[in-house]
Image (cartoon, rainbow, N blue to C red; front, side):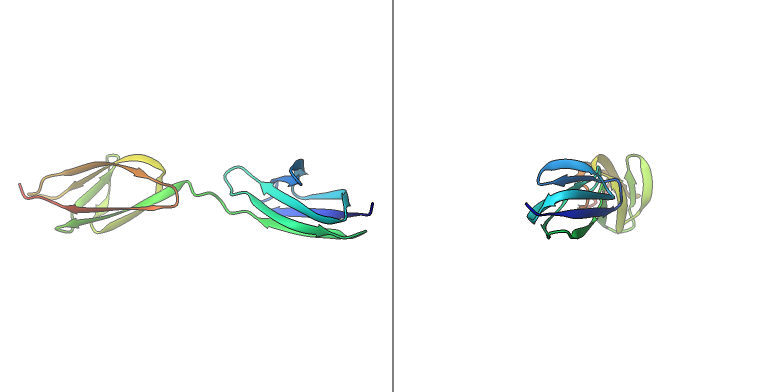
Length: 144
């Protein structure tokens, strides 16, 4: 059979490289003695989405592949609106501002949201924030 090479680099580097499902090492890497034809390259790294591509290897040639890996989001955001406006917003006991308000970089998971305005009943809700998502909270505050 005829052979070629595959050169795999990635951003970020030190990602795991699989050729046709078999682990071959970490980027940057040149894989030699690859049979001519189509092959599946998969590049993985913790906290990043997997990357894969079909490449064609030619005889006595080096096929170059650059895998740009996208980071998996670990945070989400919460958008809070209230009627009336200008209510104080607390997340996990920490004041974050007044409505209307969007709070970014909230760790994914469960959080307690408290909305307070003078002469109105406090609003309390436990919410689940998904990574990469925005959670909307709309509240009609009730007068005391």
